[in-house]
Each structure stands twice: as structure tokens, then as C-alpha cells.
Image 1 (cartoon, rainbow, N blue to C red):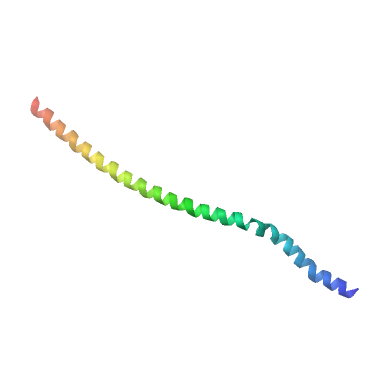
Image 2: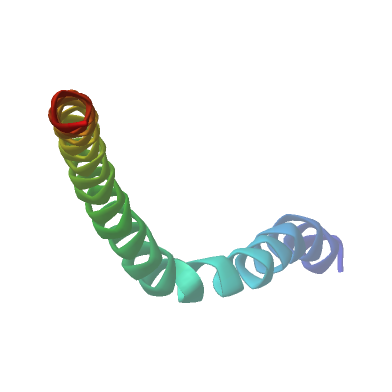
Length: 81
């Protein structure tokens, strides 16, 4: 009888641990896929950020050209009349 009590005291925690760990282990493939997707999205976000910075620089260049053209147009208009 003592052996059954000892076995129960030793085996029950392992069974409880296995039951607690089982759902986590079952979700590991989903978690791995989610991690890969997150890394891919982070890479896409980085590429978009770089594109946005390049577009911002281009817009600033176009704005400078527009300012220059406006000043030249003002000079031309002033000369005419």
C-alpha cells in the first residue's frame, strides 16, 4: 500500500506537468509561423520606411525646384511690367 502512495505522490505531479505543458507544445508550430510572419512584416516595414524617406527627400527637392521656378517667374513678371 505504501508503494502505491509513493508512486501516486511521484507520478501525479509529472502527469499534471505533462497536462499543463501539452497545450503549449501543441501551439509551438503556430507560434513559429507567427514569429516568421512578424519578421517578414518587420522587413517589409523597414523597406517601406526606406522608401518613404527617399520619397520625402525627392519631395523636398521638387519643393526647392518649385521655389526656384517661382522666384524666376516673379523676376520675369517684374521685368515685363
